Length: 144
Length: 127
Image (cartoon, rainbow over all chains, first blue to last red; front, side, top):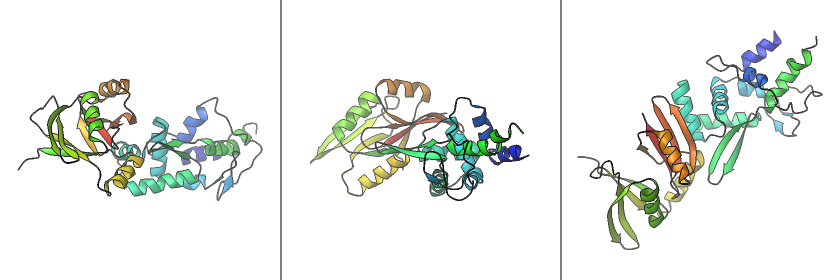
C-alpha cells in the first residue's frame, strides 16, 4: 500500500509515474542513504550534505510534477522552454513568474539544480531526493 | 498601413551584419551611414521585397539590462520562419551557432532557439 501510494504521489497528470520510471532505471547511485531513516518533511540533509526542503510538498503540485516530466524528457532547459512546454503540452498557462516560483520550490527540495552557462541559465533535474523515498518505503521493505 | 520594418538590437553592427548574412543567410538591403552608426537592414532571399530587419545599435542604457534579462531566462527577442527546424538547426550548428533550446515540438510548431552572438536569442519555427 505504501509503495503504491508513494508512486501515485509522483504521478504526472498524464498518469506516467516519474518515480516509477526512475526506479526502473538501473545503475543509478543510491546516494548511500541506506542507513538513513531520513524525515521526509521539513528541512533535512541528504547524503551530499545540503539542507533541502520538503520533497513531498514539492511533488504535491501538478505543475511541478509536469516540470519534472519535461526535464526528464530533456534535461537542461531554460525558463522559456519550460514555460513553452507547460503551455503547449500540458495546457498550463502559468505566468513566467509562477513557473519561476515553482522552480524555486523544486530547487529548494533538491529536485532540480540550476546552472549558469555564460549568460544563460539552465535547469537540470536531480533525482537524488527521490531515492530517499524509494529507499525508505520500497527497498528497505523488500525482504519483509 | 503595413508593416515594412522590424528590428533587433545588436551590440555591434559589423558583427551583426556578418552573422545575419553569412550565417543565417539573409541579404543586405540598405546601408546608410548615420554618424557613428548605420541604417542597416537585411531581408530574406525568399522575400527580398518583404519586411526588412533593421540591425539597430543597442547603445541606449535601458537596452542592455533588458537584453541580459531575456538571455538569462532563455527568451527569444524575435522569431523567424523556416521550412524545417531540424534541418536548419543542424546546418547552423555545423557553422558553430549556439542553441539554448534544441528543436522541440510545441503544439503545432517545431521550435528551436539560437544565440545571434549580438546579445539576442532568436527563435526559429516551422509548422
